[in-house]
Amino acid sequence: ASLIVKALGKMGIYNGSHIDIGTSVSDPQERNTIDEIHRCLFHGMGLAWDRASAFDVAGVTGKQRHLFQTKAQSLIQTLNKRDAWMLFDTRLCLLAPLWRPLLDRPVYVYIYRNPGEIVGSLNHSTAVGLALWELYTIRSILDTADVPCVVVSYNKLMKDPVNQVQKLYKALTEVSEHPLRKPAKKIIKQLIASHPTQIADKTIIFRDHATDSQIVLWDSYRKGALFGLAD
Image 1 (cartoon, rainbow, N blue to C red):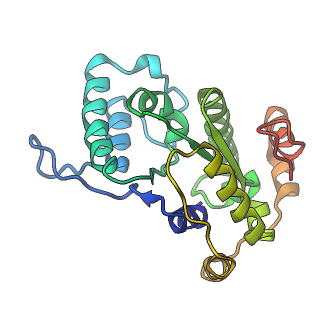
Image 2: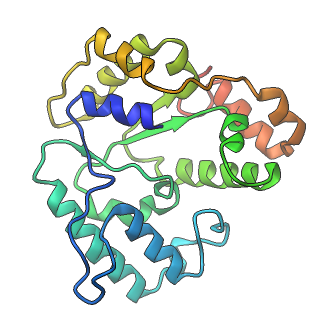
């Protein structure tokens, strides 16, 4: 995902994922980044990114929602000083419904990848990793169904970076209200050259451990049933 974030940056989209608008007045040690906003909400609900199966937007209390909105609006206000900006955080797959009322015209860039490779990068057992992948995938699809969404296949990107980044640029220009820069082929190749390559096909490993529902979900990706993008 970091490669795609960098590619978006080359298009002139500012990455606000690590911006810190300052400390909380009540707690000088508390930082106001998207990571801290999400961590604070999950912590208050007794959850974490890898212990979120019980998360439900309806379960967010009025106090928790108010604190979240206050922090998020401060971050958005700072970022709105720029023409185009982005936020990247895996927990957005679950928390998008809380962000949507605060955003004027959001566009989601949805990155999908072979689940076997995702699980291999997590510090969890295969079963837990696959369960997390399934949870975040399903929730993100359901919660973003009626919002403009541009889909990127990580595996296609690594196989054909120039064409895929240019397709991403074209798709974004059709839904963005701000002008974007088209990355030159040389820039795209430099991004790929500086990115660690991990293209190992672990589909067989995935199918050896996946449940029937997880296999159906991944096959829906591969056959183009989800978002209309098949591998």
